[in-house]
Amino acid sequence: MTSGRAQSHERGAALRVTDLRVRVALSPGLWGVAHREVVRGVSLEVGRGETLGLVGRSGCGKTTLMRAMLGLIPATGAVWVGGHDLLRLRGRARRRAARSVQAVFQDPGGSLNPSMTVEEAVAEPLVVHGLGGSREDRGRAAMEMLERCGIGRELRRRLPRELSGGQRQRVAIARALMTGPRVLICDEPTSALDASVQAQIVNLLMDLQRERGMAMLLVTHDLGVVAHMADRVGVMDEGELVEAGSVAEILESPRHPATKLLLAASSGTLAS
Ligand SMILES: Nc1ncnc2c1ncn2[C@@H]1O[C@H](COP(=O)(O)OP(=O)(O)OP(=O)(O)O)[C@@H](O)[C@H]1O
Ligand SMILES: [Mg+2]
Picture 1 (cartoon, rainbow, N blue to C red):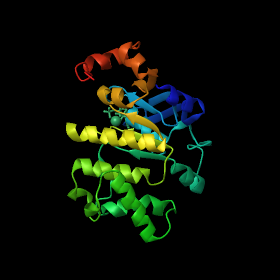
Picture 2 (picture 1 turned 120 degrees about the horizontal axis):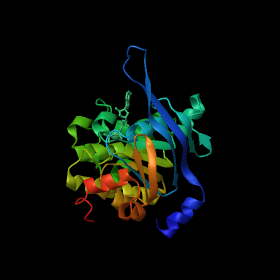
Picture 3 (picture 1 turned 45 degrees about the horizontal axis):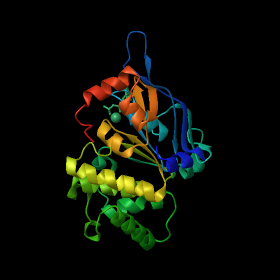
Picture 4 (picture 1 turned 90 degrees about the vertical axis):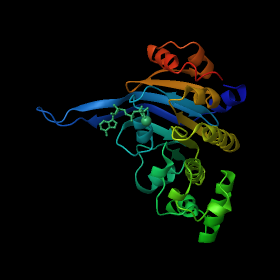
């Protein structure tokens, strides 16, 4: 973590998650429905302008944690953003606070409405949140954001299926930024893309974060991406955050067995 980032972090976390827990129902058995806790008391903080990389083996609960933070599945604990606990808010207050936390997922095809054009998809968050003035104003704002994300005017009337994977991910990023979020959650944002496009998307996310000072929570299985993008790293195992520290601490002197396993599994991809 650079000193500038450390200082902004000290001014208060943009995102603070405390004791987040998610229970899921297992298929019914002889003695009724059993439950399993798949996120088991996770607490973490991300400062303004800071990137926290979240890693852990497949099935350890990373996506479930993200979905719980976004209010997409029931959870207990607290998710503090801008002085509000998102898990406690309802109705209009919840929607207003939800503007500050946006997400980009692995499969941009799945997160974009197949029947909406690029421009409509990117303008839609302004409609949903009652922002952005007239239809023309919203269209203009959408085009500006799309251009910032590397999508030219000529693509604005295309449907998601008429775009490449990298273009779709750029559209998804533009859409996520339209409400001016304080926190951007990215769940495997480059895993579905080929290597050359991955690097472009990683660079775009880093540039946008620097410009806007967002806090970023970056879930990835790719330790190379973490080494490149993150200030700090958290390691999850079986629903718990088992280790956290600076990128150098975690990648160079891991303590927890789960971290050591991850590093051993990815040795060779960490040449950078
Ligand atoms: N709705 C659900 N019902 C039952 N089990 C679930 C449900 N959602 C998630 N799980 C289980 O919770 C665990 C965590 O899943 P999750 O998708 O969060 O893992 P992950 O860390 O994102 O994995 P990956 O790296 O493969 O994306 C898994 O064991 C999964 O099978
Ligand atoms: Mg996942």
